Image (cartoon, rainbow over all chains, first blue to last red; front, side, top):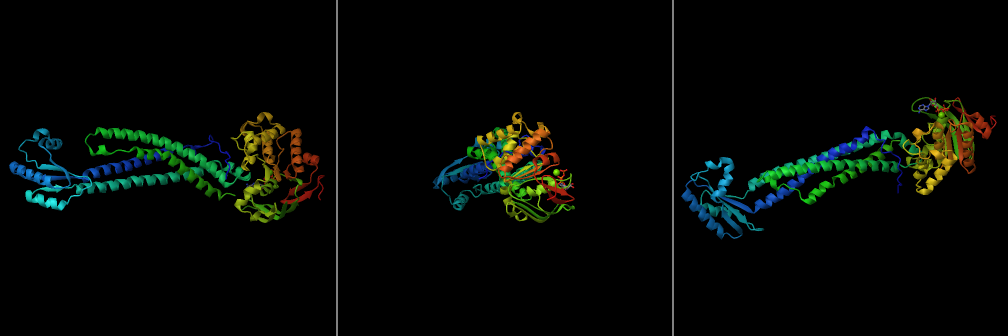
Length: 293
Length: 225
Ligand SMILES: Nc1ncnc2c1ncn2[C@@H]1O[C@H](COP(=O)(O)OP(=O)(O)OP(=O)(O)O)[C@@H](O)[C@H]1O
Ligand SMILES: [Mg+2]
C-alpha cells in the first residue's frame, strides 16, 4: 500500500507539461477519426454484403426488341419455377430510364434505344442457389443471358475495405505509439522540473512508488483532459461529416453509419488516454528513479 | 550508532574534500560540527543523511555499513533521520504547516492529529501567524524555523542540522538550540554544524572540528580530547 502524499503543485508546470493535454487532444482526435472510419466501414460492409449476397441480376442483351421481349418472358417464367427464390422481377422501362438518366440525359433515352432488359432476383434468406445450373438453363433460353451474382464487385469492395481497414488501424497504432513517446518525454521533462522536490522527498524517506503515484495522478489528469477535448472535437467533426453524407442522396455512402455501441467505444477514448498516460508515466518514473541515488 | 573509519569523500572525479575521517558517535550523543567555511561540514552531513556515499573507508550507521545499502533500504533509514539543510530546501508551493507535516505523511500518517501536532510545534518556534504562508513569502529566519520544525517533527533517531541558527537573532537561536537539546534528551543522536562559537560554548557540548580535511574532537570548552 502506498499512501498518497501530494507534493507536486499543479500550478508549477512549465511549458513541457502544460502543453501535454493539448498534444493529447490532437492524438485522441486523430485516433477517434480513424476508429470511427474503421468501425463505420465495418458496419456498412456487412450491410452491403448481406444485401448483395441474396441478390442476383440477369441481363439479357439482345438488340432486337421483339426477340428481347420474348426471351425475357421465357426467362421470367423459368425463374418463377426455380425453388428458393423469393422473387424475380423485371426492372421496368421507367426504372431503367431512371437508372440511365444520370449518364445519358433523360431526353436521349428514346424508346428505340437498345437497352438490355434486367431481371432482379431476390434469393430467399438462408437459401443457396446452384448458380451454374441456373446460368446454364438461362443460356438455353437466351444465349446472351448473363447471370450476375455481384461477386466480382463484392470482391473488389472487400479488397478496398481491407486496405482501408488496415490503414485506419495503422493510424490508430501509430497514434498510440506516438502518444506513449509523448507521455515519456513529458514525464521526463516533468521530473526534471521537479528534480529538487523529488530529491527532498527521497531524503525524507519517500519510496519510489510514492513519487511515481504522484506523477501518475498528474499524467492521468492530463491524459483525461486532453482526451476529453480531442473526443469533443472529433464528435463535432463526425456529426458534420454524417450530415454531409446524408445529403448525398442515393449514394452507397448512406449506409455508412455508426451504431450507438460503436460510438460509445469512441467516447471511451478519454478514459483510455487517461489509463495509457498513467501507466506510461508510472513506468517512466520508476525507471528514471532507479538511476537516482 | 555512527562510526567513521578512514572515510574519504569526493565529488565526481575531483580531489577528496574529506580524507581519513575516523570517529564514533554513541547513541544519544550531542555534538557540534565546527570548522572554517569550506572545510567540508555540509559534505560530512551529506554522507550522514545518505545523500552521498563515501568514496572509500567504512561508514556504519544504525548497525549497517552504508556502502552495502541497497536502494530499497534507504527510505526506511532516512525516515529515522531528521535534517535541517543549510539552504532549507522547503517545498515552495506547500504552506508552512504542509511542509512540516511532510515527514509524518511520508511515514504513512494522516488526519487531524498530524495537523494539530504540527501546529503546536510551529507555535513553539514562533510561527503562530505564519502557518498558512508559503516559503517564498517567509523571511530567512522564518524559513529556517520551518525547516527545523520539519526536521524534528517525527522525533528522529538521528538529527542533523547544518547552520540551523544562521538566520535568527541570538535569543531565537538559543530557543531553537533548546529544542535540539530537549529532543536529544529523548534519545535523539544529534549533530549540529555551526560557526557560532558563542552558542557552542553556551551549550557546552563536545565538538567535531574539521580542518584541513581532517577531523579532531574537542570537548565543550574547546580543548582537544
Ligand atoms: N556539489 C559539490 N560539487 C563539488 N564540490 C563541492 C560540492 N559541494 C561542496 N563542494 C566542495 O567541497 C568542499 C567542502 O564544502 P562544504 O559545503 O562541505 O563546506 P562547509 O564546511 O559546509 O562550508 P560552509 O561553512 O561554508 O557551509 C568545498 O571546497 C566545496 O567547494
Ligand atoms: Mg556548509
